[in-house]
Structures are given as C-alpha cells and as structure tokens.
Length: 177
Ligand code: OFO
Image (cartoon, protein in one colour):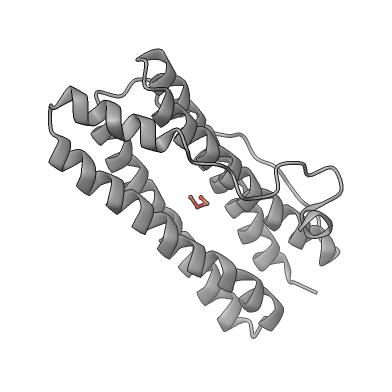
C-alpha cells in the first residue's frame, strides 16, 4: 500500500525518467548527425538505462495496486555545440534527478513507507554511478580540448558501451531480471 501523495510523486518521477530518456535520445541523434557514432552509441545506451528506470517505477506503482498516470514529456533540446556541452548538460540533469530521488526518499521516510524507501535505495546508489560516469567523461573531454584525433579515439572507446539492463518490458522488469 502506498498513499495518494506518494503515488503522485512516483508518477512524477516516471515522467522525469522518460524526459531523461528523451534527452539522451536527442543527444544520440545529434552525435550521429555530426559523425560521432561512438557518442551516439553511448547516449543510446543511456536512453535504454532511462527507460529501465522509468519502467521499474511503473511496475512498482502497479504492484502496489495504484494507478500509473502518464504526463506529457517535454521536448528536449536538439542542437548542442560540442560533446563537452552535451556531457555538462547531462551531469546537470543527473544532479537534478539525484535531488528528485532524494525528495522522494524524504517523502517516503516522512510517511514511514518502508517498502518505498527500500525500493528507492536502488535509485540512490544508481545516481552515484550516473554522476560518476558523467564526471569521468567530462574530465577526459577537458583534456582532449580541440584535439580532433583524441576526440575520435574517445568516440571509438564509447562505441563499446553496451546496455546491461532489461530492454524488453513485455513481461515486466522483475520477471525479466
Ligand atoms: Fe540518469 O538516471 Fe534516471 O533519470
């Protein structure tokens, strides 16, 4: 059982995760357009991760017997001046998501909603990894500066990232894990 306010807040988080997916899909499209296929791959893998984050919440709300209510997804930006700008925006967005998860956790603690607290712990830890990944790539991009050869080497490295989350949600997230 989760109460109405908690359900609404979790539904709001589904929307934020869907926006995250949309944002990284847009960054993937832009990267492909400018010939950086490794960056395009990295952001498309990130898109899958975000869909997984959204679907975990979707499934949790349903398993608690509550109603999933989807809201409009804001349009993401489509133009980016450089890979560094994309990753700086990504980090800023992830910090916003971290604070949103922290707010959800505070709400669950205030309501003595132990099940939701335990559920949210996964997201708390996940956000540490998300921000760490972005910080690592930002640091590399700063070292690269305007060295095209080094940028293409990083592009090749990022082409090796593979999704290690469930991407087929037809049987539910838990069943597929
Ligand atoms: Fe990028 O962690 Fe979800 O939004």
